Image 1: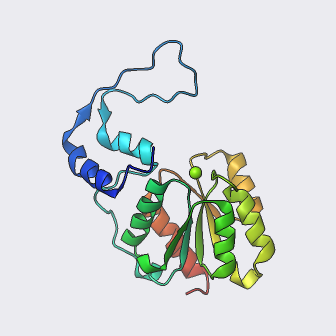
Image 2 (image 1 turned 180 degrees about the vertical axis):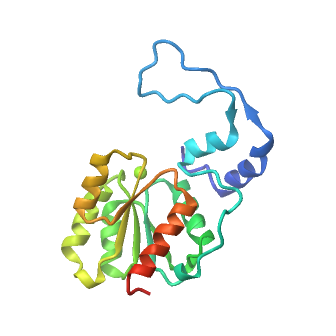
Image 3 (image 1 turned 120 degrees about the horizontal axis):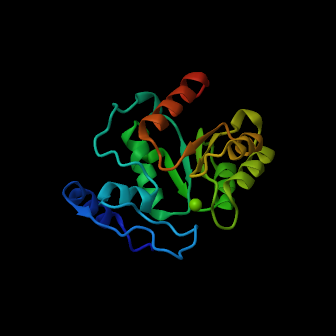
Length: 198
Ligand SMILES: [Mg+2]
């Protein structure tokens, strides 16, 4: 998806999706296994989920959690549509938008954490320049223990092997994309309750 797919497009898209059905063709013969195909009939929310990597959740299932308001959160994610949507999800579950920062690669994430104290980092694993796992190792090596942010991996891969590698690199948990809003809220609330911050 190119960067011209901006917020207005998303809003228009979201307003219309409930009443629209698109029929897509099944996988033709001869296409490689890497090619992605959508099942028919295709629902707009499914397409949207596949495009932007986010769970379709037009109606919040839980109230914003006020414990999350004081968290300083860094989103490290290279997809600009995901950046905007993850920020909106965080705001909808109770985070203060003013305390959410966004970077686009692992080096920028490392630099941001060195400059400012963050409580939480949502770290995409696949980013240009430096991926999330490498960035986490750098952060672990450079930041004193008492200032270490809680780093959550963001990934579409849910293999146990990947989870183990994330935890070994210093991340505290793995959040799968598309992001489940309620699960994210539960994880961050648990984090706040189990830590001294804030
Ligand atoms: Mg990525």
